[in-house]
Length: 360
Image (cartoon, rainbow, N blue to C red; front, side, top):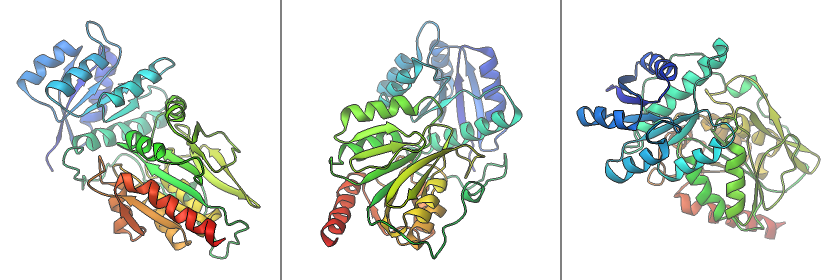
């Protein structure tokens, strides 16, 4: 397989070296240059055009957002913003996505071996995903960094004899690369009388709070970062906090969410597989599952479990995905009832929901 050519742009020598070490260790990736700032980056791009640029936000002479806008307007190249995302920078990162960045991730932590390993895996996967955003082709070579764990490490598989004590519908959604914009389109289309929605979007810690607030300000429904024991209510959407798994639970007729730590599942925390398995276990046929744009296969097995439990399952189609990875894997496993364009998903959910309400 042809290697992904990456240019690293960061004013910190330590960060440049750390990113170089991480990316160069991945057999799918070749680092073709290290740049201290955007001006230095331009000189290197003139010699060799990279497939992907990793870009810091705060740099001397020209900030990352300004450089990002110039790239996208003059010579579009997939850009991954690699930032600490602390405090004020969270809003800056959201702006970066609006300006055309493929993804925003944490700079790899230089703490424990486990933390560095987890962040390294995410960084490499995101960079490879970014390189595929124009062609929408998947990488066939697995990332050999650490064991790929299933949802078993967080929650047991659904019991086939589980008894449902409610008929209230609940929607569970999983997304990754390209998902921030897909979720915006999806949630803006949801009316105030929609069923409760629970979402896992692969995001770093400290990012989901601002992302949720921004969506809440533009949507008819209420959108918030999920907190432990939040009730799932009609007209509300709960988004998993970064770096924590999100599970759907039920107590009698009440659906609520549980925020849980634990290892990476399908190389992610939060994991879509964890959310979907919990929906299969506690909601069964009352659930509607949606899997959106993203690289890899997180959510594919969980969606199959949802369908086997009687849920109605939807995958975003190839044409409207930034990366047709997660939906494609769910379709291949046979876990998808309908494949729809992004714009058609919300109307389909409301059709199913309103039919259920009338039937009840």
